[in-house]
Amino acid sequence: MDTFEDVITKEGIKVKPIIERFKRYLERTKTKEIYKGIEARRRDGRIYEHIYHFYLYTWLFEVLKDYGIRVIPEFPLGNGRIDIVLKDKKENISIIEVKSFTNMIKLRRGEEQLESYAKKVRAKESLMALFVGFDEEKYLKTLTEEYEKDSIKFYIEPIPIK
Image (cartoon, rainbow, N blue to C red; front, side, top):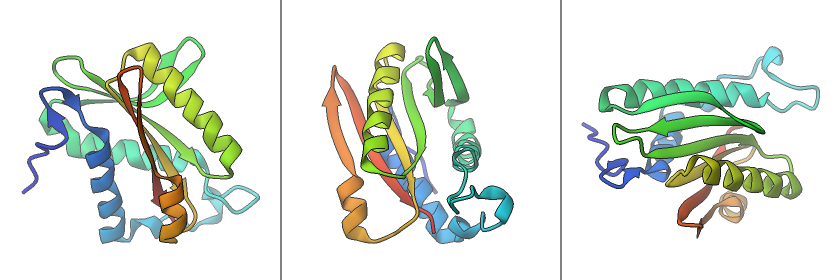
């Protein structure tokens, strides 16, 4: 039985442990193979990013709804939309941006976007759920990041999907 004590704390919502659970869920259920159909893929063979967004949002909503966490998709800002906002009963905010890895330049742009969004909504924690088309550990470690900036904790967390 999971109590989510490491996710829902007095300080706010911890995004890293919830994404770790999501990754274990994908591995356990073999769901990472669910979108093999042509309709879910771009011309270059990669899965459309909105597929990842929808799947992560749906999973978060289902697992957090009984814990008083609001899972808000596509939260509007003046210059864009945060993919997923998590709010607890005390109005503490954590955010998740969903990205599909293509190259390091786009990853850095996504990181800047994540930092900007987190600052605007005064998030306590912010995570980029980086869906990648490989599962080699040495490359996943290269993409994994954890740092703090302006009193906000940031995480870049690759999620292997093949």
